[in-house]
Structures are given as structure tokens and as C-alpha cells.
Length: 333
Image (tube, rainbow, N blue to C red; front, side):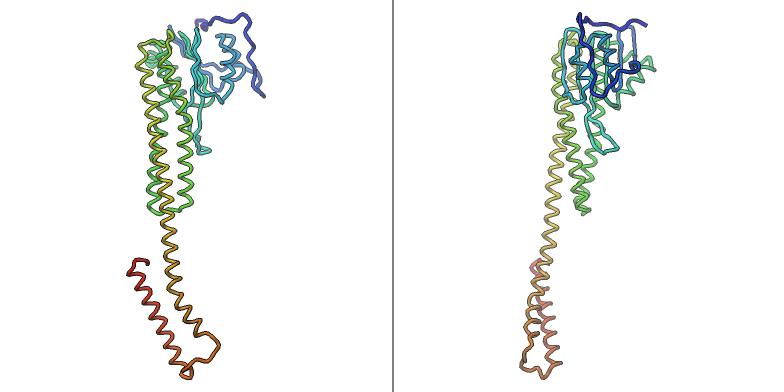
């Protein structure tokens, strides 16, 4: 096996610093796919020993290795004479928490190597790497056009993985619309709208800085990102912009659903208040009548008690029927 390509090293490289609680134990967990002209190295969740290996074997800047150790970096492209360093973020849905968050992928790109350093599983990447390891035709497809083309293939698959998540969000918004007009439980609908809105906001937070990185890659003029790759990285930019446009549309939809749900709830509340008000107004004269004749005083004709009683009852029923008919005629009931 040929030696790992080395970059020009500084005379006195700084030691790789550990993050708090990290220990430099064990061997580097480096997976390798190699052709005659290109090598792809993958290190999942790189530890201190892995970063030390990268520092000693490739001479990467310590600042870049510190960015690899940190999981709170914004997407960016750092250009050097010998290599490119990329920090990318892609949306990942966590089924346990039911939340969408950013999964970071750090990449070192040189003239004859690509090094991928995911801080957690990014779904298309393990499958693509395994296929490149086990199938010669996949290696030929991915790794015979230079490191820049391999970088495009990796990023393209990671970007495409966002579209199924967009599809799930779209179907979720469609179900929410049906639930609103079918009169589902208002508390559940409000919670679902809030969750969907949070998913879209998180998705947008991942995609917004990613767009700038793809535009920076288009402008990169390194020898391993040649002009003939412009069309490929244009495709990445277009895909990122399509995702952004869909998210903008989803944000408008979820805001519209939120307003619609509030209108539906307000309409339902108005219906309840209208009915309660009508019942109150209908009972008001009956209450007045019973209160008037319920006074503990003598009334004329009370010697005819039974006839007087039934006369009052008939009058109350007549008032009740008349007011109900009047309210229904006016459309208030």
C-alpha cells in the first residue's frame, strides 16, 4: 500500500490540543478507499487520537483540527495553498426526540485525497463509502475524475437526502390542514403546528449558511477544483436554492395554517358565545316573569290559584316559543 500523501509541514507543528474530558487512547479509526490516483479516508466522530494522526500525517493547521473537535462551527470554506477545509452541515431527523437538527461534516480536500469527518451519522455517507469499498464499478465512477469530483459526489448525495425530509414536512402540513377543517382537538392541532413550525425554522437555520458555502465552492480556483467542475457545483447551488425556496413556501404555509387555525378557533368561540347569549336573552323575560310573580305579596285573582298558575305557564311558553322563532328567523340560532 502506498504511503499516505504528506503536505508540507511546518518546522515546529503545534501539538493537537484535546477537548475537555478527552483522552488520547487507542488507534486511529481510519477507513480507506483507494485507487491508483485518489484516496478517500473516512473517520467517524474523530477523537483526539484521530486528530493527532491527521496532524502528523498531513500537517493540517491546528486551527482546522480544533474546528474538527468543535461541533458548533458555522459552515465555511477555508482555502490554503495545499488543501481546502470545509465545514458543512446537513439536516438530520432524530426519531427519539422527534426533532430536526444539524449534523456536521468536516472535509479536507487535497489534490489526491479526500478526508471526511462526520461528527454523527449522515445517512447517505456510510452507504456511499461502503459501496465504494466493496464495488469496483462504484470506485471507478466516483474516484477516477479527481478529488474535486469525489467531493461533488459526496456533497450531492448529502444534499439530496434533504428532499425526503422536505417531503415528510409537506405531507405533515397537508394533514394539519385537513385536521383544522375536520374539527380535531384544538390543543393537539396547536401543538402540531408549533412543532412543524419549529422543524421548518431548524431546517432553515441549517440551509441558510450552506448556500453561501456552495457559492464559495463555485468561486474556488484550486487545481483540484478545476473549471470543468463548475457545472457540477452549479448543480449543488441550484439544489440548495430549491430546498431554500421550498422551505420559504413551507414557512408561508405554516404561518397561514396558524392564522387559519386561530380564525377557526375564534369562529367556534363566537358560535358558542352566540348560542349562550341567545339562551340568556331568551330566559331573561321568563326570569323576569317568574321573579315578578314570585314576590311574597297578594295579587288580584289569586283566589283562582289553579287557573292563575296555568295562565302564567302558558304565557311563559308563548314568550319562549316566540323568542326562539324570532332568533331563528334572524339567523342567531
